Image (cartoon, rainbow, N blue to C red; front, side, top):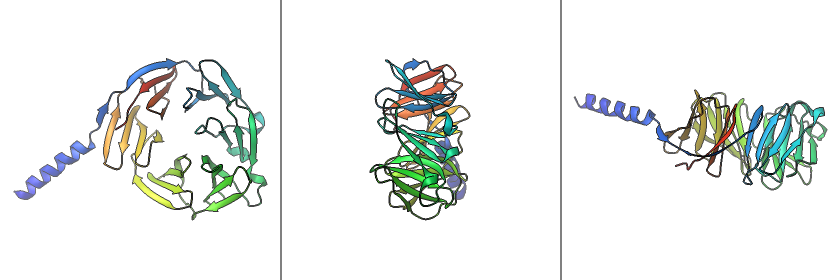
Length: 263
């Protein structure tokens, strides 16, 4: 009898845990854009997106654009520092750095480095450096934008990246087997969590993940194992971006902004 009671309580707890707590964000406004891809926003209310392989930066006063046909398709855009925008052209193993007016100020061709480097993941790091994942050696490194020196860090990484994201202190990735890792500036790798399957995601902090699944947006807190469903009205969600308590939803009609305070 005690075993049956224990089993019932366990199953009831599992059901409650698996359910999502609903959060209703507050709609702020909407912005019309004509884009293939929405990249995100910065703290100055600029919207970044691309159309036909042209990068656009839009605000209330102007629309700026940048294009470099000779380097092929833009693989990744890093807008963490709006004064130093990073464009990665994987096909040509090249990074282009733009200023706030989308003028090119620096170009790094990794094929010309002394050590053979084929970049397959790029992101801005602290101390005027770039995170670089060298697919030839399956190893992370840091490229110094001032001295033009490249330094390998940490041990080899055999995972295939399903998703990666960087900030000034960490290179984070989710592997094909849904394992979430982070590597610090000294090359130490931390295992964070086994994550849910997703179609799109954004790492919010060291334990929280926003992710899209079946056209529904969720927040998962892996520290306390709680999951939240973000209730929005858009049914054709193509991309989302969260920054400074603003959730931007990209659909075929443009961008809708919501005020969203995460738990």
